[in-house]
Length: 189
Length: 357
Image 1 (cartoon, rainbow over the protein chains, first blue to last red):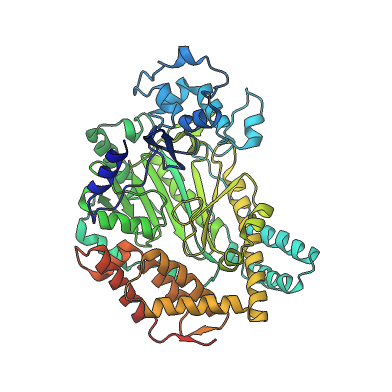
Image 2: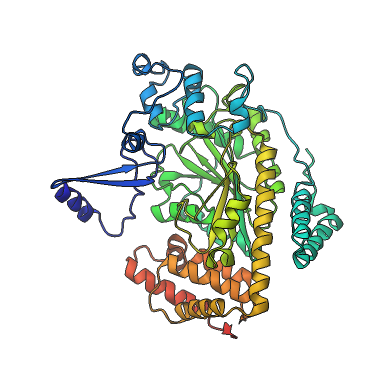
């Protein structure tokens, strides 16, 4: 194992940029390089942050996926594009729109587990749609004073901490923004 | 469909959006939207033929929409590895496009600020880079392009999941907004962790320039939204704006303090950075970027004169490999030779610069 990995290093041609290291389970960038030495045997494992392999090594047990009986679902695959549940579980991409309908709740619970849904939406009632943003064709206008709001919030904090020099600097910026309305003029659609 | 070949890639090399950026802390921001076309499988599950078909469809619509000035499509197979790396550097992308090939491609426009990547992960990844601190307006500009395109092209969408993306963690809004801040003094004084703990909530994610969570290059922190799903676009932009404003205030306050007390440690750091840049025979990109960040700080402290932020920004981008290779205009340079070329280029640019400590 040891020798083999050294050889691999040697064969990387000079001049050709190194590919980023990838998780050995999926193709995400790695977060952890795990080296295990048992007696003379050394094994290397590259794992991404959400790697089931990482969970297994950290916790010693396979991770439990709530809301699905794993055995039954393991062979589930999308009839349209062939994406399997197994590949999704290891962080593989979704293959088509049909996958979203097929793996519906499983995808949601996977994303909840890896904390990729905004917490407020994740806790909402199941019947409500999780997506709260625009739909196709809809346009949304941004509150044009967003930047002013942020500056004002920062201003009140600096005043609270009695940092008057910063406060003056922030006031100048607020003044510049309010005096030149074209700077924060929202595009008219 | 207008397609342009290798020669026409030159125009992107002339574009320098960061040259307009006088801000010493806010380096840039990028806004991107991920979209897929209805009824087609996502790129990972498409044959090359089908991919080319989609590219044709998207180009037909996108190359004629309002909001883009003279958009140009470049096929991925028509440009080399260096050009693909150049795109990554120019648009501060976190993903590489080295493997992009047949049936994949890029659309640019005359501004040098717009990039659409076709069929790499999603059918369309459209992005704007802005260096003037106009996060909200940049978002508006991009949404305008997106909705205009959406009039003639149906996006894959489900009410529950929002816009559908190949990476399920990017569905919903499909919006990634990133701000690049140069928080040099907070980083060098070791205050940064405390400050980030104080202001950052779970909605935002911080990493180094190339997406690495631990390696900070050129004192740049990349702050990006953590969620695209279950949030509105406005809340993504507003929390990013609120947090970055506070970080900038902290950095500004620390810079004032250092300037006032004529901090010895920083005088030393900046002098050394100057020494490295002026006297190296060969220099690696990361070392150069780190030193340039200190030079930028030195300019703000009035400890370094005869150069401004725009020139340093230009140097900052030109130091990176693909930009440097394009500057050298040579097809093949090995890494050792390139490190020497980089040092030479920096010497030239800093020739008149004076250290006044």
